[in-house]
Amino acid sequence: MPHAGHVYSGAVAASGYARLQAVRQAITRVVLLGPAHYVPVQGLAASTAESFETPLGCIPLDREAIDDVLELPQVIVSDETHTPEHSLEVHLPFLQVILDDFQLVPLVVRQATPEEVGEVLERLWGGPETLIVISSDLSHFHDYGTACDLDRATTAAIEAGRIADLRGEHACGYVPITGLLSVAARHGLGLHNIDLRNSGDTAGSKDRVVGYGTYITEPRDAADTPPASEASCDKLTSRNEQTLLDLCERSIQEGLSYGRRVNVAPAEHSPALREIRTTFVTLKIGGQLRGCMGSLAANESLVENVANNAYMTAFLDPRFSPLTVGEFDRLDISISILSPPERIEFTSQADLLSQIRPGVDGLILVEGGRRGTLLPAVWENIPDATNFLNHVKLKAGFAEDYWSDSLQVLRYTADSISRTR
Image (cartoon, rainbow, N blue to C red; front, side, top):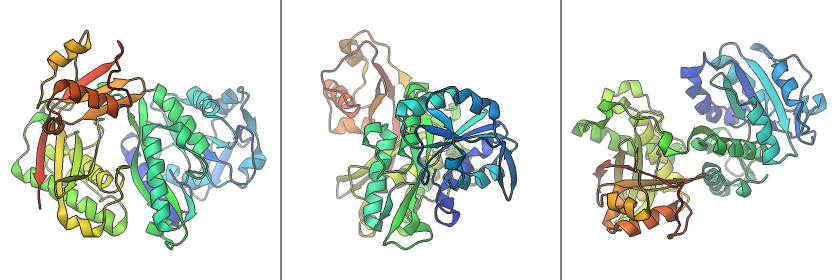
């Protein structure tokens, strides 16, 4: 989450903190890492303080945890680095408002490798009592259009876990970000963007802006996706379908007008639309693809998932430039609502191919930290099972002839609804 002045980046950070409401009572420790802007430090710097103080009160530091990581050679004590640094302190009021009693582990990071940061995070990882926050802004001091392009590319690299593609010009906190990405991958997690804006969208001019993004962890391996409830497999009513299509349009309009996602309140919708579901949103103009993005990890309501994926498809699909106002009235919108994925057990590629149902199955291929998927709708263009599987391999970053005994393949079905112009 970002760390600029609250008037500039506060709303973007709040997008993430608002999601902690449901688990606020469980969190008793916050591990907070941010970059050193003023006093360079080799490695990670801890503080000798017993507490950090804001106008909202004092936050005790977890001295036991700090002493534990000080055993690592890359962690030092440097009050000189902490004293002028704002990258951590900007987050403290949010934490004090959203959480109950908690202890803080604040670390400032400068010259360190992803492995060195990752080793510290692994030692502090903990369980549901621990919240890990990485503080970073994105691009700095470009014009609005350039910043949007750079931040979209950075977001794509973060979501894909491409550590080598992240540098200082992309995010001032790229060192702790890459450390988190390395550890998250080992825990089967990836990062997912939920808010991407800049100071030109919030409280500044558009001629010289700073980028802000909020990202949350989610399971990267779809095999670990929690099953949806039995009720979520029921067909939606026509009214529910129209609500979802309307929500797609509202989310895109919000992005065109204000550069942000639409605010969705699940409680205002029917039980079927509050079910935890996964979706993909596809946009076309004149029959030509204009964007397609979605999610495979079930961690939010159907209405939230559709709204978020509509925004991502319109503005963050790395294959396309952001949608423009002039294109909106020509959009064809399609929503694919996915069933819970089930693993296919097979002994060989031939065995796998014999089990795939052309025209019915969407496939997810998982191998190591890579994952690729094709929706059932793609059978219209790739009707052959072998070619379909090969394209899923390509989506995951493998060659068409790749095979491994550790390969996992899951399948799902999809109900599609659409609105054409």
